[in-house]
Length: 113
Length: 113
Image (cartoon, rainbow over all chains, first blue to last red):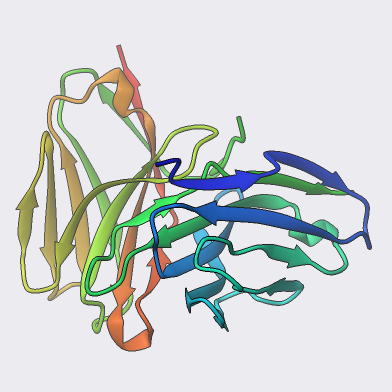
């Protein structure tokens, strides 16, 4: 199993540009989520999905869109990048049915200038 | 790799000593708690978990204590090793809120040789 994979590892965007951060998992997990991590802060939940076709907002959803067309993939879209979105982004997945152990991807470091 | 948590509280510990990392959680309805370890440039890794109906759980060199009266969680690492240097996060799960994990701010542990 590759676990949770994320691409790209690093990205630099100009203000106003759009891009998609990719996330995939091969563990057949129903639950997937996106977090951002800023210096001095813990991880904050952006969006999550409890299964294909279902998404919901987390703590800091503004400026981001997600979709979940398959169990494996959960892309995060930045519609119009802003410097405030400079952060490290982590995708995570976990099983359901009372199993809460969450597996994280290696992260994408995004800089918006 | 990305240097996250530049302003995190830091615990310096001598190699071989025991470490205690503390965490205060916010929601008395949280039913499950997890400790994660994050090394520089990597995603968080699961260390140990505890359900709200327990007050202590032991793993290999690690022990988690839960005090629901004061909403406090701690992680004890026995015989701390250089490889334990990392940022440690606690997370609380609230099943009633859709099993969303909420992360604490993190503590950096530095092991001195």
